[in-house]
Amino acid sequence: MQIILALVVGAAIGAGIHFLVPDRYTRGVAFAPVLGAASASVAWAVMTWAGIGTDSVWLWLSMLIVPPVVTYPVTLVMARRRIEHDARERVELGIA
Image 1: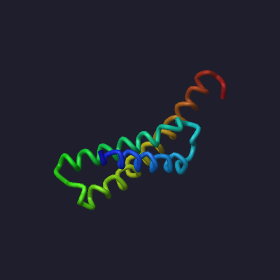
Image 2: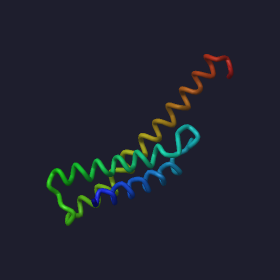
Image 3: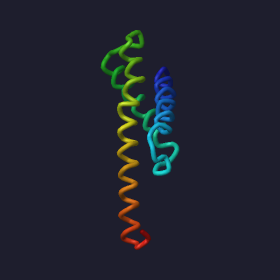
Image 4: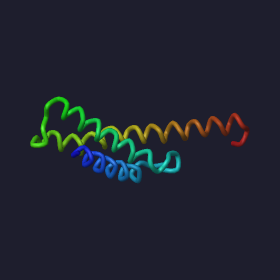
């Protein structure tokens, strides 16, 4: 049940990252929050399966550290790739 905390915190971190990473128009508004929630919940699940209980600070830190470490670079790379792809498509279509 406490994994819901990881989902909510991960989604909030992802939403913040959505606004921090430039070129927001290149991705959907839900991409970064969903990625943040997924990474936080996976980190939480892996840590609990490894036997780390809710009384450990490492479990709580994992849900705060993993989402930005995963979400920021993925959204940054995704935005850059989308811009490059769009530029190639414009050239191929003769628009640019």
